[in-house]
Image (cartoon, rainbow, N blue to C red; front, side, top):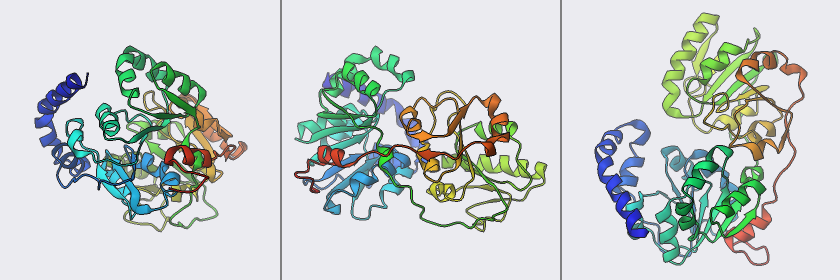
Length: 391
């Protein structure tokens, strides 16, 4: 099985080389592709009894914060990522070693022994777990979930997942349903721990000014086509301030063009947050990473994206609910069901009903988090603590 998988991965790598060489010049990939697929400036972690966390992107790296902070010696922390935004977020842990995770065919000689490998959610890279176990590491899959949409495809390739799970020592699932699905696919030691995002505190890192006479409406974590769709269905009040926060930075320019046109049509003043942080304009594009929590802190109404078109599965409602905003989401939240169960007064609706919901949003109670997870048992299980002490 190992030889077959390695051969297929090598063939895919060779076939993809022309595309990789082309994409490496794109801003989104200019650091990640050279590091992951050509090992440029990507030396292995130091061989030591470190705690290695692997996450894909910005949001997942941030979610690991409560666990990373529990590692007694910050220099024992290793973090690998896939995306450039994830890499930049991981670098905020100043004493941690941060790397891009190389492509599968390089892992057998790139990986150096650590004490524990902790992998976030759906990052089921076979060679990552296989090589980690071969080098004597404890392997953990954290915050694991299988959505309703994905379960059928997982079952079709159940033999592959049984092979992968044979190298994973502990699986921490988000819900009972996830736990049962993971067990059916071969996961061995499965515990239901809830979603780790319920352990976080969402504290602003910057304080923006707010005019008391204005209602601040945020379109948060929007995806392709959602800005137009939402703006088509809602009617802003004359004193509303609209802030749009696209999910992916590569879309900033396209959304800038859209909002410029929209503002001109509506007779509103428009700017980008990177150019003007005074918060005086009527419409703003948040074109800076890491600002969403800071903006939630001053928001009145949040319309959460990634949920008005099928396929994404919604985004984290805990962040806006932490600040008690009036919260609206689309109907497609299949990837966030556990988190929505921890929030009260969050409204989910079909896009065709969004206008009516938005018009009456002031009659709705503010959102709030009803359940916060207990991190202590997970810290013991993940980090191998004794008597509740940090590693």
